[in-house]
Length: 80
Image (cartoon, rainbow, N blue to C red):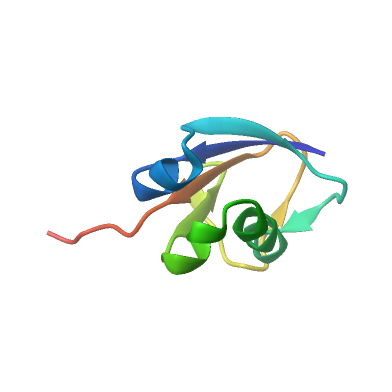
């Protein structure tokens, strides 16, 4: 399964990328499982709080991701 990952703010700093395509063996995959994979690939993600959006909608951890979905990893937002 191929997904498009986009990184913003602190997450882009951690990954040293603004975006990448990920090839995953599982299909579909939950946001929770993807977070585990990403935190294995980028251990500093474990040290920060971040949200995940699937196709431009904030996603719950049980949300299922399908091939060709666009996933955004979002740092904490300041209110105001």
